Length: 579
Image 1: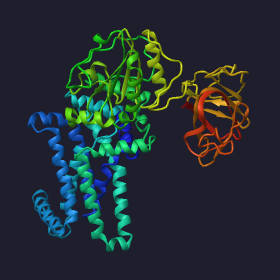
Image 2: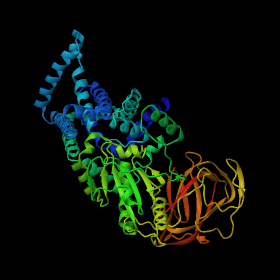
Image 3: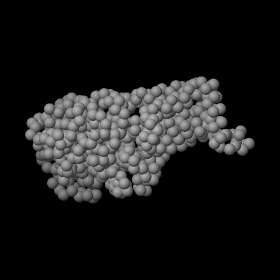
Image 4: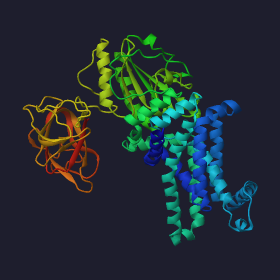
């Protein structure tokens, strides 16, 4: 349990780097740059309490009171807008301060000294803002919080679930609190802003109201979608901090204590278990109700998603493209919309999201988590690849591996008797690569053509055959191959026979602060500017930080030999991807 608490806390901290934090920032800043020093603490305290309470108990509260989740969200939005109005209109602010002062006098007894320096009204006002934020915020969750939400949705709330949720929320507020106090310090240290403090407050008041309206009308979701379309790499991979063997083992223990969780890796299922049936839990969209039994003979892709999940949103264009491309070949895509929060159960909200994202394949509501539990799922998004006999052949959790996923679909369709063209063409997302992702560390290495035995974690010599087979790569020279990465010595080379238009390589410098470099050759010649990727300049790639580097960008896809010559021993290479 301690491991899960720690990773939930870390998951909360890295949330500050995710697009899902964007709707919260204006409200946190607007609600905290005014008032006393205790107001930010009130906002964060209320946020932790509100997020924990509503995450674990909103369904029960809705059932007990009969007040819909959407109504409660509107109330929260009105509260947030009200605080925005206090920043715009001094009389309204004075009126609200009198109310909170009276409330504070009832809640907290005052000594004469406290009467002159009392900050309690600011703290209470902050708590009210934070409670409202805790209801309207929809985070980008990893497997830990997803498991807790699933347990809460099925009325299995334990002390452990409360601790995990508090830990995640606490991790989230730490960078928010730092930003808030940093903003206050910046404001007070600049006399020109202090003189215009009234105008600054009005600007933040408008920002607070606009943000509240955006949340009420779901424009915040559209804004996040726009951000992701503009910056597709923004926030990717953040939840992978929780995706490791230790966390999976602890989640298994949580399952044994009453949850409906499952350990799952992105690997083939060698036992090909039968796919559970789809259990009704609300409306169907774009289709009449379907069943796994009724789809026998078809290839089925079951995709668990929810419309506020940033990680899910990134995958939807790919899934829609597969539906459009392979539906007439026998593929049936079924989106299983399993809500993270109670307001996502509203069929009108789901229908609006389906329209916004341009989805045309069947989508079913799984409001009671019945299908989620039948599949023992715990991830958003999660894909289950089902063959013509109704067997689950593969699973994939999270983002990425789109080429690999499409090839799985094509394999299952061929098995079902469909004729599939050799070339992969998709105008929606322009897959132009036949070569799959290639990992360079021994933990996931495939398609290594070097004839020497692979030596783990030890510097060893390797050579490249002539020719290198298509879709294979070879080390040449002296290399150290670790579990996740391969590290060449100066003078080493790598040869790759690829079939694609674009080649990308994930790399980082071995020593932080010192650049690594390599020369790029295509078909035996220094790569030309016309064929070079964005990170290849005059035939050289300089590696300054850990990221994906764009090596080759051809006008048309085809088979070519890529050769990389390493000019130093300060590089770590992780994986090739292709486009």
